[in-house]
Image 1: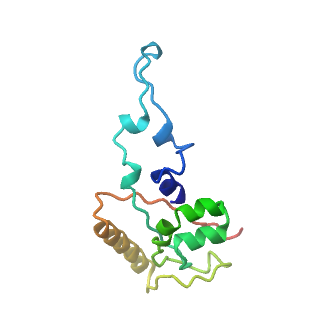
Image 2: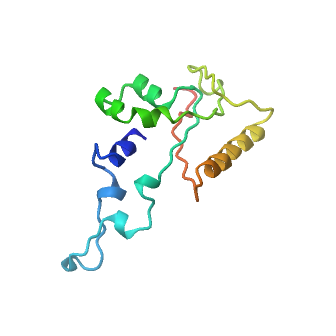
Image 3: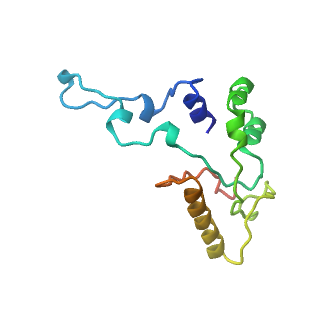
Length: 147
């Protein structure tokens, strides 16, 4: 999220981004036709991306990034206002699988199906709130119980 916003604001280049910097060869090599993938394929523009999150920890994205310490302070501060606006929705969380975290920002439900429906409703609400045509959801959670 911080990286995309840094690129959108012109602070960074999308180094390593296949969709933003890589090219695709068209035809024979001798034809020298190699447009950027983003100009060839119907991809969403970076300015069209909207970020949301679920997290058992209620910290906004800025606070979480600051605690994680993976970004340089100067880089983090440049996009801090953007990150502070990303507050996680309550997560589906089970201490049986993740024993070292006590999340305060969690959903409650009688059944797993109830919890799944709450997630589905979050998706519908997020899509409507931001007037989006489609959603892409990336799972970034630990699911390994015995590590």
